[in-house]
Image 1: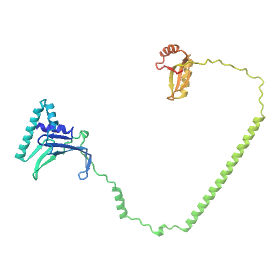
Image 2: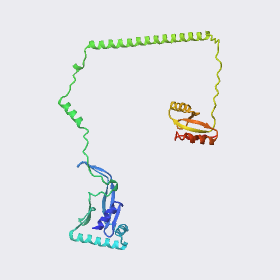
Image 3: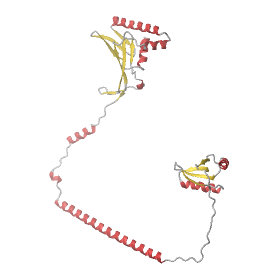
Image 4: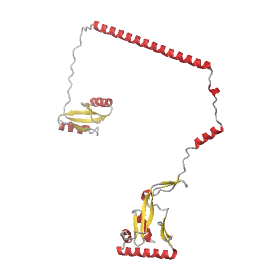
Length: 309
């Protein structure tokens, strides 16, 4: 019966599918659960039920049939009516009706009963999930085994066994007394050593201060003053050669660039914590761009940094 297939398709998408003139198939989500008797874990699913009171056509099934078979809406309604008539005839002749992959209808105590098919899960989120064997975890096995062993071989502690000879008590007290006295003596010795070290250190510092105050430094032939003329680089246009996380690596790069003839220097640490190395700094943008073009031939990663005025 194709109508049953259309109902099945709609049950995957909707929670209520009405078969006009017969009743409504309702689906409700059910969470995963464990059957303790069979020890089987069942995934989440949609449980299908039937309500014979909802018979009025809501258009859902008819529109779906019309769109699927490419027929008119009235033609789809007529096909549904024919299908319902066949169901009623089956009830009269056999007293039951079975819709494939949906469920079975039968009368019991003059009431229409519906028994859904358990093997089909209409919950799309659980597609591909099957029942899993889930045996119970025995957490008390080892505890019970220990209890059984204790029952078979109990251990008795008698007062006589717990008593220790009196001379052992006195020996223990003597050892404790010796330990306390030794500890106290050690503390006294350590205190004396610390005081001695402090006194010697103070004396040595006093002698050193006295020698410094008495010392006189005389230089007969003073060295002539040496003057270095270093051209300070200025400008807000910087040709950046690279940025380094470790400052020593940045300094090494500066030394390499200076050997190559560049006026390289460290620009400082940027907001990312990297030490920037520049080939040179310029006051004019045109000069900086011309130099950037030159260094690009040997360093594609070089770029122009413009600092705000």
